Length: 277
Length: 325
Image 1: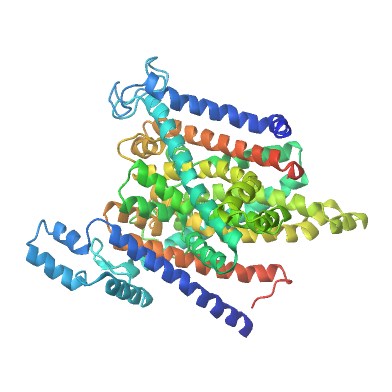
Image 2 (image 1 turned 90 degrees about the horizontal axis):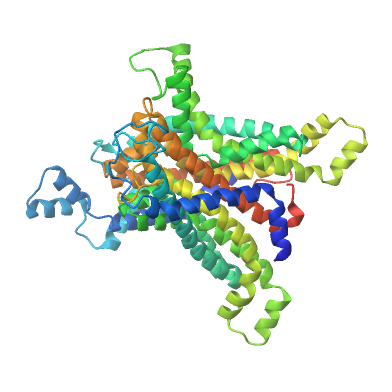
């Protein structure tokens, strides 16, 4: 663990990612403190250019809504949806992959067929269909993103389990009569965790991009303000007030970049031999 | 040749359960969707008597037990009958096929762009590993990899259409220009530049990173040391010896990314008003046209299966050790 932290801390890019991520988390936590009112409220004159009014540092959109409030509240939406959707995908993927890899045989075969099926369907279009049929809400968006992103986790977990399954310590567990569930959860899973964590951190980034894309298409939860929603609305005034579109886009870019850097940093620190690849 | 044909037939046979599985899934989603076709039609007409709705339900077979409906649905899918889009007043299949060429053109252009530039940048970065050129390429790839595809599209419109006025910002051809021959092709190409570039950026970044990693891995193999030891130039080692083997994982990745590119094209087509499948999906969402939406989902999955078969054939050509069949 100490080695791991030292290796991670030596990676400047990963530390940069952590710093950006902490800023985004701070935005999300401070949103209800600094902007207790709804970000949908019209609080300023419309089309206030960033920097023109100190009360609204990022300016306002065509309806006079404070862009800074939107960015703060959007950070909350992006992080919550990104993280919860990833947890859903991890729960489904790890369960399916663990069962398939541990039991093998026809169980493995059947589960991998299902995984293949889900992997064939284009993920983003699938997410659009799910959210649009079940009506856009934070819950439906989280479940849709979880539904379309678990297959790679299942494949990864399965391959880890397949190799661990035949190792001696697992055989020893079976010999002393330990139950399958206990072996899977307490003995095999901890050894397979490192690559799953790396994948998870990168999946949060993808989930945030997917959420932004859905919101941009108008499939965001109508009750919360997401960065994608602001871009979707700002698109109509692109020619006259480009900053309405530009600012939330930069927020998404930085957040996704930070998560990718952290994920890669974790990967390098957990597999030091692969460094510099 | 017959071997390839046999392989193709076998692969397509394998695809049947996948397509059937997606069809069953589609049917389940339709069952979950609030309101069926009869309700939608009745709503369109601005209200209807219960008798009329019952009559409509009977006409669409919606009054029958669910398993019977499922059987009928699967039979229809097998005959490529995906239902009727009441909004466009057209069978769903015809509608999708009429929009497919535009999407294939966009995706084809984006794949060629992403793949060729990705390989070029990846090879360049690997040949200059840990030197300034590598750093510039890697940072650029890292940024492009994190950029929302629809946002970069809007920013490109802002720069190249609004500010500089170089390229058209939307559509596929100039309306009312009535061009023929070369002029027609150039007109479409001019409209294609921005959407294809926007769609390809993310994938270009992905291929650059993968190509760099793959090249570095092959560089460490013994046969490369041998090639250098016989006095070959670095350029020859890179392009003749390393590149070909390093390309293999790229081809695999290409197959894996087709679905994700189809998803990206929904966003890009919406941004640029490109009249393809993605734009159609966007319209279907807003017109609450579930038949059309599920038809697009099914056919885009079939497209993914089909393109992957083509990629497998390419793979066998690249690496003679892999045999088809």
